[in-house]
Image 1 (cartoon, rainbow, N blue to C red):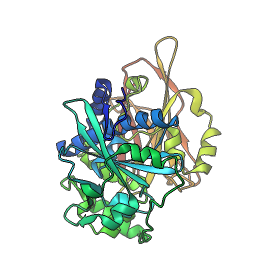
Image 2: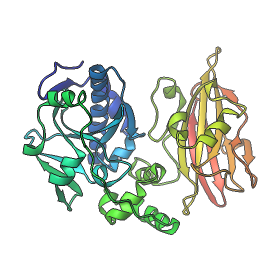
Image 3: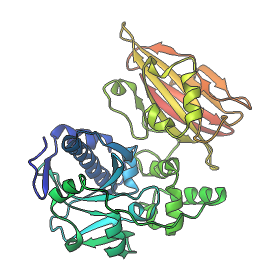
Length: 388
């Protein structure tokens, strides 16, 4: 429920949203990072409907695409019309300052127009939008804290009357952004080294372990960020991942890391066209896509799973493998196979030198039956457990 319009907006957090957010962040292994992801989740999905109610336009979520990315950086971005609104949640009740991670200020692709300061009070099931500022103000009046890479804006410089925010939306556009310098381009060797080093599960906050230029450079590709998210999950000490519960998918509950087709292929128009031409069209069931790193050289592929309920209670499952964003073909000698729990091969397909995708024959099985899916290249095998 959305609260009455006041200078500092109070919004209610629904119990259902709290439960969903806690479920969707369960895989983040470090308690403090899970809590950060949880706060962001409830904040994002409470602020979004409020903005829609006030404007009549549903805002688009531009970051993050998976809850686990909040284990790397605090904050969310919503696009409303031609403005980007960055939402920064916190639990401080004194409202002495607005602290914004550097990523939201100095990364050209991440910076916003407006920054909302939000206090989340989980016990009271409420959040408070206590003020806002602009990128220009934070960049010119904020103080950079190098200890945690944040810009700190004193509350005296934060506009704490949200009615002013809505008035400005009906006025001629004001200058909200400052130009920031372009990021340095990282070489493939630099990226590989950084990803290998920062994947150490003992590193809780990778953003604090490398130079600002290196970290912001890594943030230019979201699939690199997803690889850094992986070791901060429960059970990611081996190549096996959390079982994929397809029954929960049909209830709109998904494991961390799985995206919709639109999210996975939005920047890859050629692949999106190829996907629509495949034997199993996307509308044949519920489809989710996950990006997977194959080896230490960070070759990547996208795994697509489609599940559809049958009239007899069984489930029809389709498994597909696509190149990573920007690639035309799958790596040569890549194998995709489906096995029983006793490692009996049910079916397998191999990539050639010009394979645009791999697909297993669609199959039907009873609800609750388990399989193992293997993606193998050389002596490296990634296993995913599927529960139908």
